[in-house]
Image (cartoon, rainbow, N blue to C red):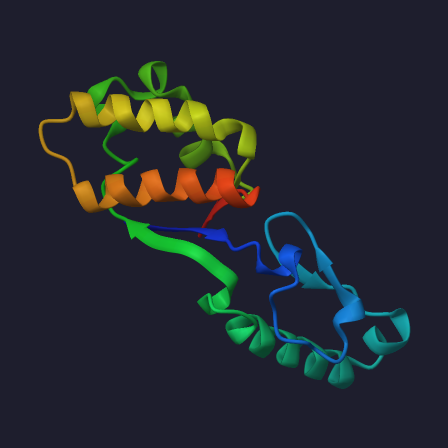
Length: 153
């Protein structure tokens, strides 16, 4: 089992994206950008699909970050090894966010506690994938820097 994690860049907030001719319909929903098309456009499914397709093409290359992700990566062991080292009792933030949170979004206010628990897990574990640890460290840093939450899929 693996988990993809990412933090969206702040290029949209800073106005550092390529112009899109219908950018008035783009809305920032906190963890991502979305289209809020008028009902008239939504009523025509083929037209709405074309807008969505062009929007997703734009997102893929709107700025210097592919998919507008400032940092992204995949984890295969962290946080899945927590049960071996105390489980939910020792790592409640990791447990909640990766096992019970069904929104795929880690709220910004959870970053500090998650970072503390990831560091504790690294201390307890006999072996650790340091690439994954580095990824988590970078995710926390970029999330705080951009004001965007960590997301996973």
